[in-house]
Length: 162
Image 1 (tube, rainbow, N blue to C red):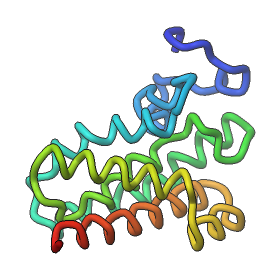
Image 2 (cartoon, rainbow, N blue to C red; image 1 turned 180 degrees about the horizontal axis):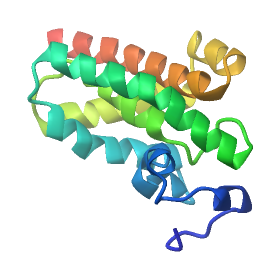
Image 3 (cartoon, helix red, strand yellow; image 1 turned 60 degrees about the vertical axis):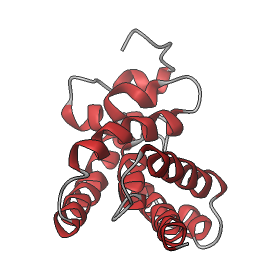
């Protein structure tokens, strides 16, 4: 983890710990600038690896990633001792995946999904902001990005139909 200047609270995390490694998006969350964006960028090749799955299998994989993400994010939060630290980006990986459910093929759709998901994740319109403020821990970290992903998914599907 010496590539980035590590803030003191992150020194309790280790990329050798599988839960921490996933929570940090394989290290992307350690980026000193825009760690959430970096986490979403990590999600793109992961998405491309599984994008050929039938939609029900893709959704099942996301469901497993979401449920596991509650534990993954909670483990990192417990180690850091701070709620929802920006370095925890597993939620971005799953949120982007949700955005890309049944997305048309092509780089322009990956780009559209990336932009839409980041827009909803950063701006946190209601009800995303409501959940973000009221639900904490691993579930809270995962839930607001799941909802941001659902909003972006809706936009993607409307764009695809248009």
